Amino acid sequence: MESNKDDNNSRPKRKKVSISDLPACVLAVIMSLLSLEDSIRASAVCKAWHEAAKSVAVVQKYLWVVSIPLCGNSIDLFDPLQRKKYTMNLPKTGLTDFCYSKDGWLLIRKSCSLEFLFFNPYSRKLISLPEYDLKFHEIAFSSAPTSETCTLVTLNPISEYIVAIGTFYHGATEWITTTFQCCLAFDPNILSNLVYTNNRFYCFTSGGVLFEFDPASRTLKQKAWKDVIFPEIRNNEFSYRPKKLYLMEHKGELILMYTYGSEKPVVYKLVSSKWEEMSSTLDGLTIFASMWCSETRIDVLGMKDSVYFPKYGVHNNMQCVSYSYDDARYYPGQPNQLYSDGNLWIDPPPFLK
Image (cartoon, rainbow, N blue to C red; front, side, top):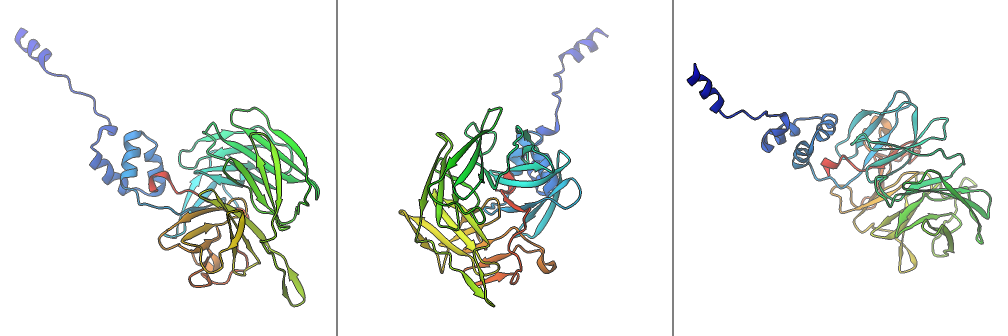
């Protein structure tokens, strides 16, 4: 009996093995078989699983459409190239209004409320913000809310020459609102979305005025441009002004686009302090335009030299509305409306980049 007891004590103890200790090759096979929803959940389990999800990723440089259905407590994600739609639950009820998207984060407002929230649909992280009790026309943030450099800005034209700008800084407990007296007229009816680049927020109006706001010093500059032309289109004795202005940046340079209903989008690029029209080509760019925020990508296979709008399902066709500069036409057909008010563009899941 003594001998048996000694033999048992001398045996090495078995190490407890968890599912996170599976070989990387086995994890990769498992991840490749998962749906998008399950891949998102699995990649959040631990570092090993996240790396396995990235290892089977498909390189995607283009953006996805994100929308909130009319009923329920969920969001829809739509892949414009694969033409696949995925539905994910929201962590809170009553989140009905998308306001902005950047770096995979959404800025959402609760319906009939002053409450704003940052939400990342892939990490499922939610960040609350102090209430903002003023009206705003445009809103944007500079970087992911987890970054110490994140700044949130709202713009509200009070009159033709007065504009109020609200600013919220990372780590702050309240908003700061500053009212500016403008020397150039501010057209409150037709203006672009806000865009952040080179440590400034920019907005362009149909009057040809570019507004530049420095959040560090909370100063506002204006500049009038005569080389951007917004001609009136006349049809059956009616005149039409631009329906929507879209402002975006590419490698620090501003790009402006405007549309007249379903006419061809007109694109300008700010080069050496001069706006130049990109009339026949977009130089390999893909523009992802939406009412609240617009972005660009370069050399996207199958989407180059095109403008994409976050509207799909036209004529029961699961295809985003787009305009091809190469083909000089809209797809899947001439749309009655280019944008959907509640839809935005968002980065694809991080393990699909």
